Image 1 (cartoon, each protein chain N blue to C red):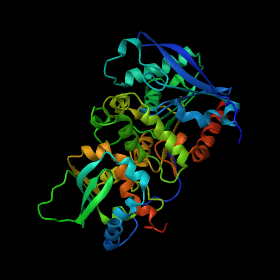
Image 2: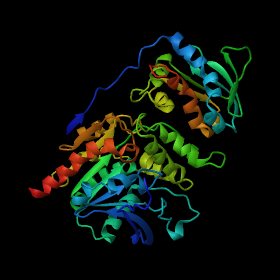
Image 3: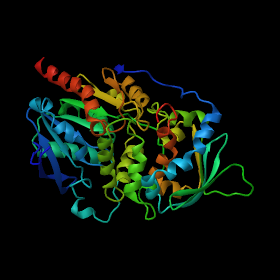
Length: 286
Length: 147
């Protein structure tokens, strides 16, 4: 092995107005074709998508774009919000995704989100289906039962990075690649103080979509839901229950994967996402 | 809705005798003593806790990440800061080379009601990965078929 290889991913910043304030948002992209916008999980950043971003087959047909949400990764908090408690809401999350897509001038992109990204995809399907070509929710459900107290995530006598990573470590399937597991957890160790907790405000409190998903029209915008069998946070049963209430939604349980399919075991995830991306291409030809 | 579900859902843990589970748990101090990296990760940890199978928990005394004493409960007038106890069947499943889904993490076990976490859990949370890896040591020692 020799050094010097440069990956085809390009990273840039775009200025996006969200709720009246300019946010400097970092995004990475590769490929050309149908725009595919990828949303990272709570408390992490867009590096989770780096394997998808360099997939030679996918990038032949898709312009794959992954961005760091404000307060995450290389996207700083909005200038006016330093010092205030971060709490993600359904309205802000939805506005952020739409503003980002508009800022880049994307024409009816596909959006794929994982975890909180999967949940917000459902809200996009409810409120803005016309704006999107297809929606893909990974580890997505209208609601799931909490399994720990988020107060532990941000307090001065507990190391935030260590506890966040240790909590989510159990959501990774047990026999995936060790390096991918370590990299997935590294993202959690690097999150800003209180950011994972603030994301979970959306997940646990503000973003309960029970009773709202039944109106999703998949004829307007196809909806795919894929969940790892080892995800005990958003369980396969949570996803299947959600999908059962949405006529025409396609649900798949992914073997040997957990809550972070694209980063914890990219090769295994590829087996499941490739047919979905092909299905979307095939629908364009009809 | 159309759905696909590959593989077989495992609804019951691996069968194993409670005695075998207790014996495997009792070997944890020796396994930790051979794991320098895990011991080092616990170097800031001093705690007296109650861990193990619900049928036979152990008082575990940890100092600087090392188990310096482990005694079968009950022990007269011995106190503990927190307790993590699981059914023997859950530990047997947790220790499989590839644990079945939902039986593969300490907090997955509490969520499904196969384990209880009680007491003053601050030391558990500050060293959460340490305790996950500590209680997984029998997996690496051959419980469930791998040595």
